[in-house]
Amino acid sequence: MLVKVRRQAVTALLVLALTGAGCGDGGDEPVDAPWFVVGTRRADVLILDVGIGSSSCNDLHGFEAIESEDSIEIHAYVTVDEGGDCTADYDVLTVDLQLDDPLGQRRIVGCRPEGPLTAGFARPTGAADDAQCIGT
Picture 1 (tube, rainbow, N blue to C red):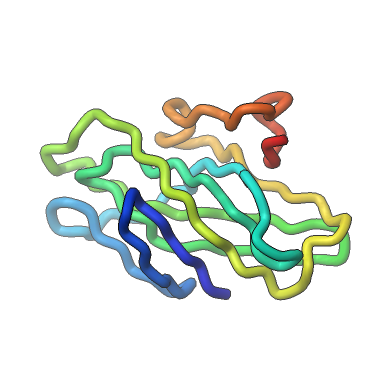
Picture 2 (picture 1 turned 90 degrees about the horizontal axis):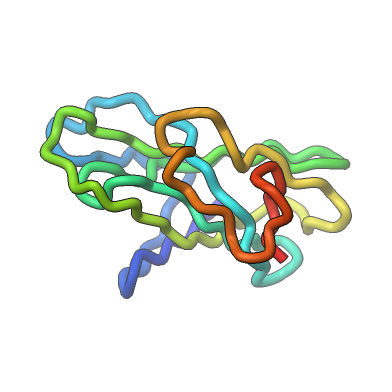
C-alpha cells in the first residue's frame, strides 16, 4: 500500500511501514488519528484528510487498511510528542491512499476513533454527521 501526502506545498511518498518522529525524542507511541474521505483519484485510490494535531510536534506515522468483500477499515496513525514545546494549531494532511482493490460498493469505516486528536478535527463540508466517513 502506498500513501502520497500533501502538506501545504510539500509532496512526499510514504510506505506503510513509516516511522515518524515529532519534536523531542520521537519515542512516543502512535495514536489513532481521525480522518475523512474527501474524494477519489481512481476506483482504487482514496483522498483522505487526516487530523495530525500540532504541526510542530506531531507526524503522520502510517496507515492500516483492512479490506474485505463488504468493507474497508482504515486506521491512520500519528506520533504525538507530548514532551516538546508544541504549537497549539491543528494540522490536517491530505493524503492519497492506494487500496488493494477498487472501492466498489464497500463501506468505509474507522474515521472517528476515540483519542487525543479527535476533539480538534472538524468534519468536512457535506458530512451528514460525525460518524459518516465520506464527505459529499
